[in-house]
Image (tube, rainbow, N blue to C red; front, side, top):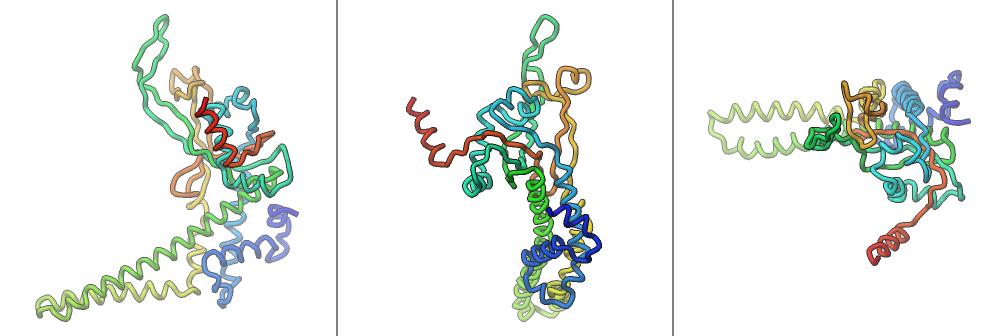
Length: 319
């Protein structure tokens, strides 16, 4: 039984194996000692369960699978829009460490599924446009293209790949919980450093300045005490709740409709009939930059090691 079945079909059990595993995974990533506190697992059940359900549904909503094979660039307008040329497809897959490890460890298989993420780039250029019987030059245009293609969570089946993707999304939310705690730790160090800087000034201060410095130290000390109390591991459950009870605020998909012609030029208004409408899915909050994402189905893609790619590049240079 897969993660989705385990999570949604066994609600009669308070803690399903999937939920137990997710709580253990999250706690281990944030602070392993949380498993020994009085509030574990009760205080984490709802927040982790909400996040796990959300990321599972989010992975299910990803578009695709888009088939990538040797003929896809010529046959599929979407693939043509996602890659600058046919060679870019091979580059994207041979440069993926996730995929290279999968291919090394898996039995030979001509077909697999994965998450593909790309950076969508829009750039203003001056190009040519037909106008009746003439061609206008230096026309302002907006070109849209995709770069930094990344492959994650490869798997022999689509369902398993989406489960792996769901856990990547879940880990992203856990990382945001950890970031909240790390930020408080950094604030603690900063406040302590500020107090340390003021103490010598207080000892040497004249009476008119002493009161102001003392007040500043008192304010900093009060803030420091609050931070120290918030860094008690038993209070970390509130960090889980802040992120995982509202996961859509930290990680979400947004649909971006764009009309593109065969050259990647964005068409709007009266020019829309000169292009083709696409709807791209933007993954917001996965890391510091947003990704355009889709699930891909890869068929008969050749596995090349880094050494083989280097040898091929060397051979091309010699020609």
